[in-house]
Image (tube, rainbow, N blue to C red; front, side, top):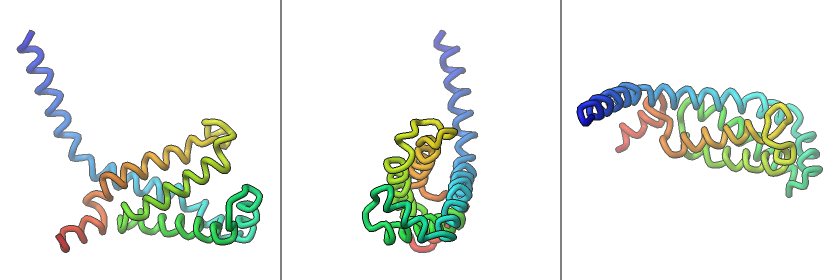
Amino acid sequence: MNELKAILLDKYFRAAERTAGLRNLVLLAIRFVLAYGFLNPALNKWADINGIAQWFAELGIPLPGLNAYLSASTEIAGVALLTLGLGTRLISIPLIINMIVAITTVHWSNGFEAGSNGFEIPLYYILLLFVLLINGAGKFSIDYFLSKKYK
């Protein structure tokens, strides 16, 4: 029994070592998926920033004009920075805040499911942004090269 346990544990840890090499590819994929996900909402906000400010006012968001610009700017900066892997941990924080505001003002009352405009997608974005906040951008990023140069 102990021999079987040792064999299974050995196989498990070997598999874990092999998949650890995928870490940087997964972080790259997360960055690209998030950047793509924020792109159209950011462009749509900028295309009708006054309409967004008006909508924010209807939602009861304070300083709707300022917050429309802040939200759109955060998202467009997020697209660029996540794509490059530059300031990844830093940009993750305001993007998380943006998603929390989106959930609490728009999506929460619609329930969980994305098909009902619920909070499912923004919640996934928050979780993925926390992965980047904790792990950084990975080796395929400007952050990685800067850390090697300045450490």
